[in-house]
Image (cartoon, rainbow, N blue to C red; front, side, top):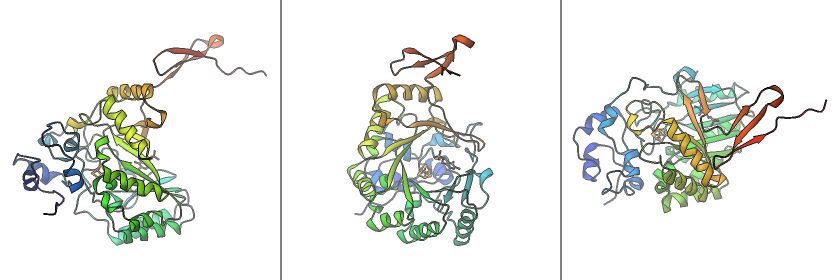
Length: 350
Ligand SMILES: *Cc1c(COP(=O)(O)O)cnc(C)c1O
Ligand code: SF4
């Protein structure tokens, strides 16, 4: 029997992943998809399995908190045309599809992702025109949804279109496909990703070392060998990676796969996700521990997307402070073990 992607509570029950009939309410509210590669990874005997926690719907998702929002990072306010989010002058998000290979229960765009919301051909043409007409746009970030659920043919068409825009020098693809459906990373899709004739960066979303299975690692190796630059994006999730061991192992696994950890995102205030959110003090403490004990290659920047559309800010621990007055002014810098050291201010000879 061929294993299929699970979408309905009945399918989840048959796969031994959920028992409660009430999950119908959750599934009717937020998209569900667990592809075979991830279904196979779930340990059904572990009630705290970090893979299940990320993808199997939970009744707690119906608990919506007042601070949560349908548009937690303010995409809407910065969307000049459908499919584009333009928050920073030099880069735009281009959302080619709202479909993902797997739906994460903590998704910051959970109100807009889902199987029945494709970007039409006309909207895509308007979105591409928007990029074509703004010479300040240096980088285009393909996101969604997950751009790698598209066929190689559709992706190639978009990439070739971007190539005709002289000002677009870098294309970045945000994806979870290499871990959710590694079989999709074919030679054809790799060629399509590179068709831009520009530097192509791929930011892979991975939250637990176990997601990097043998098949996923092979798919990632194909991407690295094809000359794509690989970055890691992770979300800090309570009960998944909010311990030093889980986070450190994740970062090491990424680095071993030739993926440079780029961002550790603080969980956004998406509706029904409070049970999966950690707090910022925990995130900062974890970052200090990473800095103290794990290779510099394993250090992502810990960032918060400020609610209301104000963009991302680094919120990791700070190691330097000013001290002293006027003539005695200096810096105090803290080392990885927590010891403080004096550092002189710049002395000018003129
Ligand atoms: C996150 C984001 C980006 C990318 O930000 P970087 O700091 O360059 O990774 C760009 N545009 C929008 C709207 C974003 O939310
Ligand atoms: S892959 Fe990204 S966009 Fe898709 S559900 Fe997960 S977090 Fe959301």
